[in-house]
Length: 67
Image (tube, helix red, strand yellow):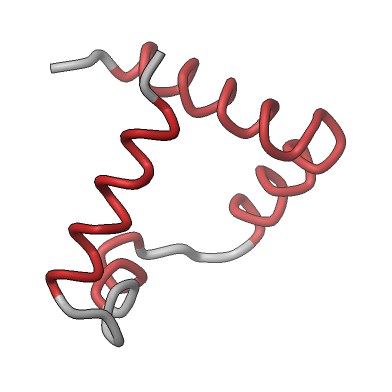
């Protein structure tokens, strides 16, 4: 299991890689401004997808991100 520090560091690296510095900072500010309930958010995240679609997306993501 990863420590909170590792998760924070990896998350920040992902944000920086995909959004760049300015947009990553904006994202963090947006998250801090709004009350955010991850559990409620993720309940509907894959609502319109079948388990097969979710599995395919995960497999595709893994293939693209294997180093």
